[in-house]
Length: 406
Picture 1: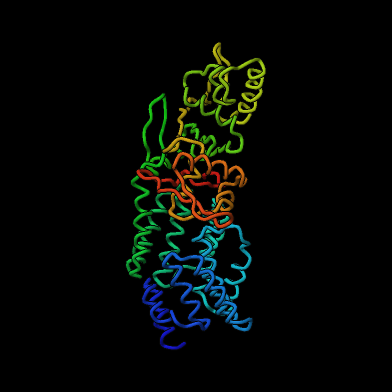
Picture 2: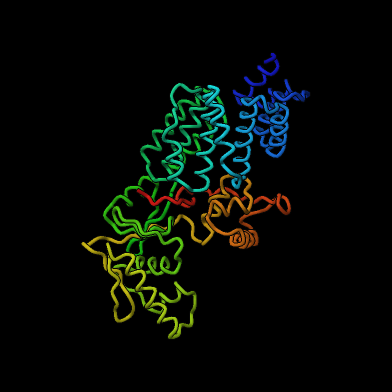
């Protein structure tokens, strides 16, 4: 390694992208191209960074496996920043294996962390936890340790384990201070702010109260029956009944939970579930069918009884019923939470993260764009979507997750 390449590497490790570019900007050999690509990524020029990294990988040739694997890991991190989530994870896994086989432990760990962060973006919390558990995080450089602890903290937050998340963030702060990388310190501080902001609203007996994440964790760990409007399901102790893919049943459950201990008129339930203001006998018959389905799903912890006016939720064992409502209303709260992270998302990446079809996401984005809540940049396949951050509260509970809280 010549002196300019070594100096550029040290500058990049310290977060000085411009200092690195000053040393290698006019060079086109593969090591310089790779460093230029990483510097451009740090400056936010992701398409150019990807182009340079691919050119560097081709320049290294098939015999230089270690250098090619490092380029692939850097390109994977650029893809993550670009929210390009549709590619196969196999090339990154192969690069990590190649790095480990050649004793490049730090870059192998970086590759594994990129894979975990991709899983977190997709809401696959169980898979992320399994991938993160075997990683060896001792005796690694402070900057890499800070990234690892931030990843642990995000997983804990998304899983609503507040105390482990706080501990991981404290460790991340200590490592970031040792690394002296301003971007890492800023990310740690932003993550810390999530604990102090409202995360949801508690609605009981018609009274709403804002809750922080620790209060949400305590509520979900209590004996109450919780209609979770953030994760779209019903929680009662250790029992979790997801309703995200059954919107009619969720609408009926929420109406009954909000009215508890009172009942809800049949016409009101029909209006909430079927979105009609002129019910007829077919709607009433359908309501009886859907109430029967909901009754079967919640039978372990509550009954649904008919009254003269409609239906009432009757918890077993004298439990309370609470509605945990998201901090903002609307069908597109999760979409706005994803877009509020400051990155430019493609429609396909949003569809992957939300578990929805691209057409569904396109319709939602069109509505939000008409309302001025999102904006697009680029055209055709290069189109990306942006939204301002959701100020005043944390969006942790709005992010998609395929994990039933435990």
